[in-house]
Amino acid sequence: MGAIYLIRHGQASFGAENYDALSDLGGEQARATGAELRKRGAVFSNVASGTLLRQRDTARHAGYEPVADPRWNEYDFTDVIEHHGDPSAGYGDKASFQRILDDALARWITFRGPSPAAEAWSDFTARVDDAFSDLAREANSGRSVAAFTSGGVIAAIAARALGSRDHIFVPLHRVSSNGGITKLISGRSGISLVSYNEHGHLDDGRLFSYR
Image (cartoon, rainbow, N blue to C red; front, side):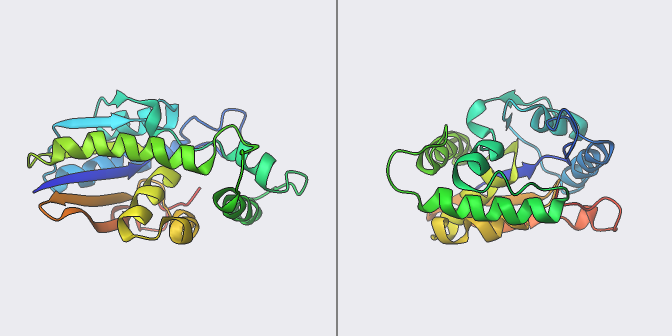
């Protein structure tokens, strides 16, 4: 039986010119997550990440040198909001941003026909499933593997494992914490989700964040 660990990146720079860069807190979260993985004795035969800076730097701060693969990248939230939400609403804080994003994601998921967004929901989930299948194949031999990625990617994989992707993606995604650890196992019965968004290693009030 093999294990697949999915680790959400540390806090990005919300509201800054370069959102993709880890904040100072994000770097701390990544180091704490790496310490937690070592505490658990997790040894990975393969460590992947997306090509986004916040994903790759989280892996490096955690103590790993990942193999970058764009299939692990997050969806483009600005594009989804522009084409499926209300971009004129504006958001000055994280709470209002989350409300606007949730509404746009719900419309993105249920939209039928040629998508006005650069990437349709079906295209996003197809590439995520493809990346996960490749990583899980290695876990089939009893090894442990990991991917440093983003909340939407992890929520899509977890929702599929639970059998109701379109219906539970948004609520799962909404509670994804920076530096959270999700674990799936690969066995004779297939892929099973055993934990989602573990963040006890960050739950001291200072290191915990959603965005």
